Length: 91
Image (cartoon, rainbow, N blue to C red):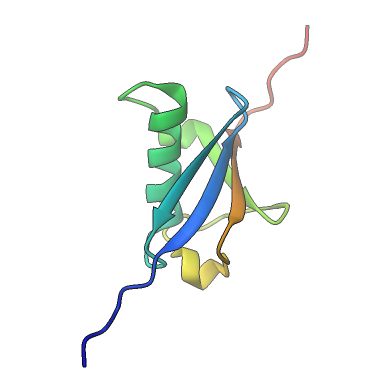
Protein backbone atom coordinates (compact mmCIF):
# COMPACT_ATOMS: atom_id res chain seq x y z
CA UNK A 1 0.00 0.00 0.00
CA UNK A 2 1.36 3.45 -0.85
CA UNK A 3 0.88 6.47 1.34
CA UNK A 4 -0.72 9.50 -0.22
CA UNK A 5 0.70 12.82 0.88
CA UNK A 6 -2.03 15.17 1.99
CA UNK A 7 -1.99 18.74 0.78
CA UNK A 8 -3.38 21.68 2.71
CA UNK A 9 -4.81 24.74 0.93
CA UNK A 10 -4.21 27.90 2.98
CA UNK A 11 -4.52 31.64 2.45
CA UNK A 12 -2.12 34.24 3.83
CA UNK A 13 -3.10 37.90 4.13
CA UNK A 14 -0.10 40.25 3.97
CA UNK A 15 -1.29 43.54 5.43
CA UNK A 16 1.62 45.66 4.15
CA UNK A 17 0.22 45.42 0.62
CA UNK A 18 -3.35 44.29 1.47
CA UNK A 19 -2.82 41.24 -0.70
CA UNK A 20 -3.98 37.70 -0.08
CA UNK A 21 -1.89 34.85 -1.48
CA UNK A 22 -2.97 31.23 -1.67
CA UNK A 23 -0.79 28.16 -1.28
CA UNK A 24 -1.27 24.41 -1.28
CA UNK A 25 1.31 23.10 1.18
CA UNK A 26 2.11 20.04 3.22
CA UNK A 27 0.79 19.96 6.81
CA UNK A 28 4.44 19.60 7.91
CA UNK A 29 5.28 23.06 6.53
CA UNK A 30 6.47 25.39 9.28
CA UNK A 31 4.88 28.75 9.98
CA UNK A 32 8.23 30.46 9.30
CA UNK A 33 8.50 28.86 5.84
CA UNK A 34 4.94 29.85 4.95
CA UNK A 35 5.57 33.42 6.15
CA UNK A 36 8.73 33.67 4.05
CA UNK A 37 6.94 32.41 0.93
CA UNK A 38 3.98 34.75 1.46
CA UNK A 39 6.19 37.81 1.98
CA UNK A 40 8.29 37.03 -1.09
CA UNK A 41 5.25 36.56 -3.29
CA UNK A 42 3.18 39.49 -1.99
CA UNK A 43 5.97 42.06 -1.70
CA UNK A 44 7.63 41.00 -4.97
CA UNK A 45 11.10 41.17 -3.38
CA UNK A 46 13.66 38.43 -2.97
CA UNK A 47 15.10 39.68 0.32
CA UNK A 48 12.66 40.36 3.10
CA UNK A 49 13.59 40.50 6.76
CA UNK A 50 11.47 37.84 8.46
CA UNK A 51 12.06 39.39 11.87
CA UNK A 52 10.18 42.54 10.83
CA UNK A 53 6.92 40.58 10.51
CA UNK A 54 4.75 38.43 12.77
CA UNK A 55 2.10 35.83 12.00
CA UNK A 56 -1.36 35.65 13.53
CA UNK A 57 -3.72 32.69 13.43
CA UNK A 58 -7.26 32.86 14.80
CA UNK A 59 -6.55 36.28 16.30
CA UNK A 60 -3.49 35.24 18.30
CA UNK A 61 0.17 35.78 17.49
CA UNK A 62 2.12 32.62 16.67
CA UNK A 63 5.04 32.82 19.09
CA UNK A 64 6.93 29.72 17.90
CA UNK A 65 7.22 29.92 14.12
CA UNK A 66 9.03 26.56 13.97
CA UNK A 67 5.64 24.95 14.66
CA UNK A 68 4.14 23.01 11.77
CA UNK A 69 0.75 23.95 10.37
CA UNK A 70 -0.68 20.61 11.51
CA UNK A 71 0.54 21.13 15.08
CA UNK A 72 -0.94 24.64 15.06
CA UNK A 73 -4.33 23.23 14.07
CA UNK A 74 -4.59 24.85 10.64
CA UNK A 75 -7.55 23.39 8.74
CA UNK A 76 -8.02 23.42 4.96
CA UNK A 77 -8.76 26.92 3.62
CA UNK A 78 -7.71 28.62 6.85
CA UNK A 79 -6.33 32.16 6.74
CA UNK A 80 -3.17 33.32 8.45
CA UNK A 81 -2.22 37.00 8.69
CA UNK A 82 1.29 38.40 8.25
CA UNK A 83 1.73 41.91 9.58
CA UNK A 84 4.58 44.21 10.62
CA UNK A 85 6.02 43.51 14.05
CA UNK A 86 6.03 47.20 14.87
CA UNK A 87 2.99 49.39 14.62
CA UNK A 88 3.02 51.85 11.75
CA UNK A 89 2.51 55.56 12.50
CA UNK A 90 -0.70 57.07 11.17
CA UNK A 91 -0.42 60.41 9.45
